[in-house]
Length: 214
Image 1 (cartoon, rainbow, N blue to C red):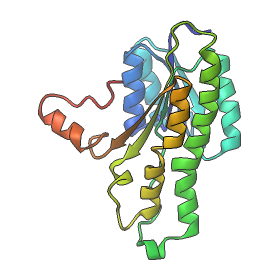
Image 2: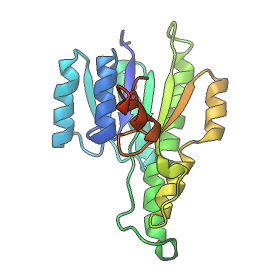
Image 3: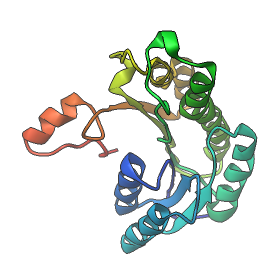
Image 4: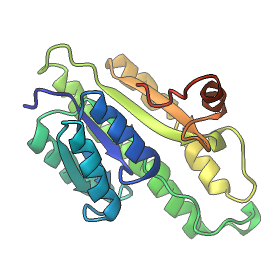
């Protein structure tokens, strides 16, 4: 079993996921970075940044909407590291075409919900079950699950209703209660233009945004 804690980040090859992976690697975590492709330029660049910190890097290919594929992914991470301490559910997409709710298609709705909500929910479920078991195996084990949501979870956008619904669902309050009962910390972060929310933008003006100071 790995001596260091392990962070699992979805949508890790760019943007928020990339920043989180590097921050957690710098903070003492080994990294399991999940993306659609392990061979992308973004994933290769991330590997270099993570390894500069002295952390181990394990790239994992996964379409988060494929819930059956998630079983193998969890097994592979556990085979590599023997533990999962920190899950950041970050993977997400916007509609391929923005349109009024009256013109929204079922295909667009299903695509966004499967990637932004259904997939992450069932991935968190699988990881949480392993975390509950690991609590009995590792001393001082303090698992954490984070969902990256959006300001669109509370402020609607008239031309991307399916996205707003998916991000509002990301708060997952029923899951939160169950995880807290099992002593797993749960957080949801609302990101906006600075990879967080407007309150962090204000803090940034005052001397530093601490969005990823987990």
